Amino acid sequence: MKLHEYQGKEVLRQYGVNVQDGKVATTPEEVQAIYKEYGQPVVVKAQVHVGGRGKAGGVKFSSSEEKAVENAKNILGMDIKGLTVNKVLVTKAVDIDAGTEYYVGMIVDRNVQSYTLMASAEGGMEIEEVAAATPEKIIKHRVDPVTGLRPYEAREVAIKAGFKGNLNKIADMMVKMSKAAFERDAVLVEINPLFVDADGTPLALDTKFEIDDNAMYRHKDVAHYRELAAEHPLEIEASEYGFAYVKLDDGNVGVLGNGAGIVMTSLDVVNRAGAKPANFLDIGGGAKADVVYNAVKLVSKDPDVKSIFINIFGGITRADEVAKGVIKALEDGILTKPVRMRIAGTAEDEAKALLNEKNSDLIKMYPTMFEAAEEAAKDANAAGGK
Image (cartoon, rainbow, N blue to C red; front, side):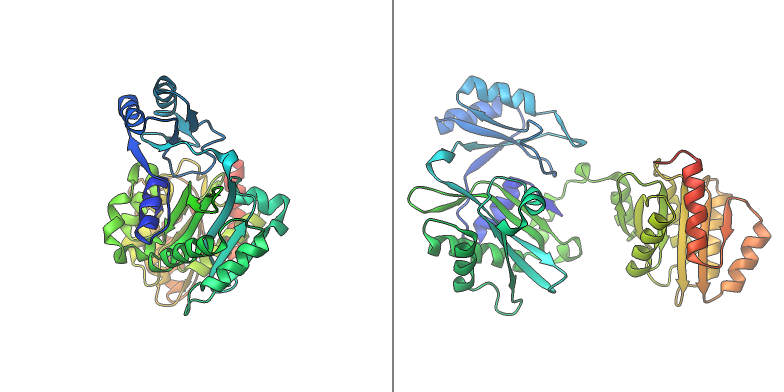
């Protein structure tokens, strides 16, 4: 679950991180009142769950009350990468020239099976841009999951990254950020920019904070932060069914499988076949016909999907249950797009018999996943998919 900047700051504040104060507003009048309260220039910042807000015009310096109101009117309601801005964060402006901007972040790194602490002197820039243009400017350090980040390690990272200022205070902030990541089951925590003033004191000006959805039952105190309006409607519906579903951009083949590994493989073979997967959908093990039915119904709702590739290896999942679910979707008029399947394993022969009896051109079963994926790709591309 992604947190807005102001929400992420609130979580970090609970761990003692020195974060920039600010107040949330939903109307220009509220922005005006906040400006009067602060009595100094402010920054009006769009609160949406995407990066690149500044480049999109969603972050504006406001030197006067009138400018703050004008900026609020322009930002509220604007579209940033498909998301509508419904609220803004108003913060006191900081004289960036009077200090230095840095980047620090914690990210789940599966390559090292732990968190990796990242630090860069290129604060204020998108870390992806830094990684692409000057990767040597990003210092990385694996954080031991048992001991956590220790102060001396944080200081060493800060020194290697070229940070200036009070390194003990900067290291302390990094340790606290690390603790927040571990205890909150975060998949990503960023402070960017980390502003260090002329006295060497660090201040978190902007944050990104994302909590693992699978761990949300442990963090009910922030569950109300979730905003369904900011999520894809199919992902919301999938969560109601209990599916592991991710909508993918620019895809034309719906992908359905049983198990994360086989679904990931399915995405690869669709790409190899010359099409693009439109989603990741894992129905899990032991799925019955009704589960498959709901999965097919979900994928069929995606207008980007021109064909569906089902890849099932039956162990505890019976192939005939998969076939029954697909056939029911066809009979109910839900399935109008071609389905190309590889179903192997338990009750495979029974599944073949059911599909042969139905004898529909919309549903075809193939011996290998490569053949099924190739046919699904052909169908999707022929239908004018992306």
